Image (tube, rainbow, N blue to C red; front, side):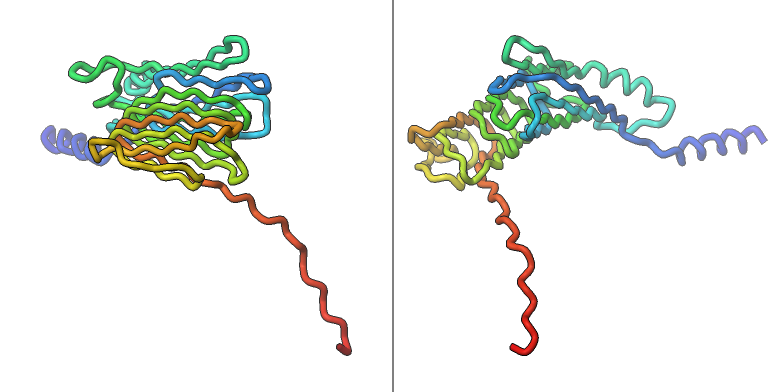
Length: 238
């Protein structure tokens, strides 16, 4: 009987489903017209999206890479508390800083080998100036019209920009390609594995983009044509 009871407990424990632990948080901060949003030490998947409000909305989703049984999830959740995304206004500039545990054997500022995933979605005024210092992960800029200064270590940078925009572009990838829907000059770097793209016109907006390992993709977002309404019904007898 004792053996049977013990075996039953083991089977229940084995059948218990394990899950990744996830924590979501949203912050709101005001930003004046023409202000600057600066991201320091960001990591994971980052999306910066333009909208029509004079404010910044920061939504973060932190997840464990491993799965945990119910008895272990609270402890894992406390571990995610060590990953912090904070925002602070400094005049006309909003500074968003990411801090996370470091791991021995990697660069001091790098999350390579980290035991967490971070997905950060930030909504900003469309004409805000953006300065992004990103580590590892994909970076996406969507429907923003201000100047962009973005550097990333690994993952790739993608921009969806209004087709009517005019940009002076300086984009380079050490190990990857640079593709642009906007006109400019492209060439391989001297060691044949890097790529760069430039547009040196006196455009009203500037794009400065640097990628270590990954591609830089600059795409035009084409505005939908206005609806012309339904065609008039044919007149009877014609």
